[in-house]
Image (cartoon, rainbow, N blue to C red; front, side, top):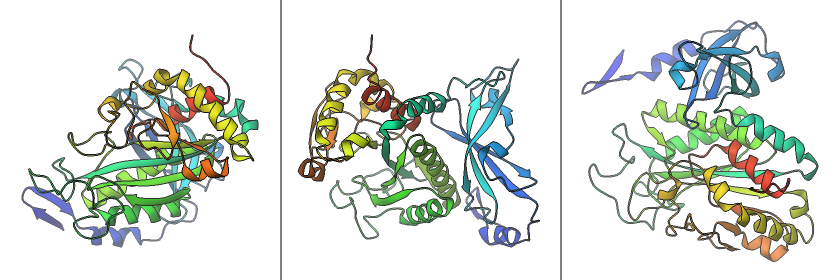
Length: 365
């Protein structure tokens, strides 16, 4: 049975539940392979059956897909490999079924052009003794099927910003069902989700992943994005990671990146933080190039951002490029917050360049 709204058919989820409740053989595992496509922003997925439950990514077979259809290969050499790199519990199929985060590799099994993870792994290994930690604050906007923000008057605008940040109420918290379903799904999957809140623009939300050490933070953020997209799909809602989905006097969407090393977390770590900020200032333009498409529409110097062409740092300053949290300034140790990355950034690229600049002291020629 289908429910029809105009010409749009909406699947009856009650029927699906009957089939998901069917017994599954103990010897079979449904594995959903997930990867970043040729845009460097969008996710793709396909599913296969395994004959036993894997205990590590190395036990999961490599697979392949048509890179022509994802912008990652040419017709004459279309097969692109999927290399499993992380396993998560599947909150959709449940049981022993799994979600598998993958790297993409060319026909030669070398990393594909859009595979930012392999360089990130290199940086994390080189800086292992400094124990880099990351906390990623993912902002996003919920949209109706027509592309207009969820809950906004059609063709019009809600009241100006003010009551929506951490808001409560039917006119303030637009789309909370999606947010709370996503929160529980992340916990079930094994993602280190730290919390969530309504953001400044109505229908815009944020959740936090971490703190995680090394490449784990980026693996988990990509998987959390997949979960968000899949859950919103079931509610008939779209998710936008555009850094400025609505022009005008509305906040944009970022992926603020909290970063620390062991030295920063130890007593008087503020000295290491100050040193890191000086290094980040010298490579500001290089970092901006790694921090997401169309970020110039968001980093204007307004709406809690610094101008994209300027570098600023300060304690508790949300109009800065790098914010030192108030508590860190008082305790003289902790972490810094890089407020420049856009919501559509590749976290592998962001965490990679942070480590190379701060921990490995890379400099531009």
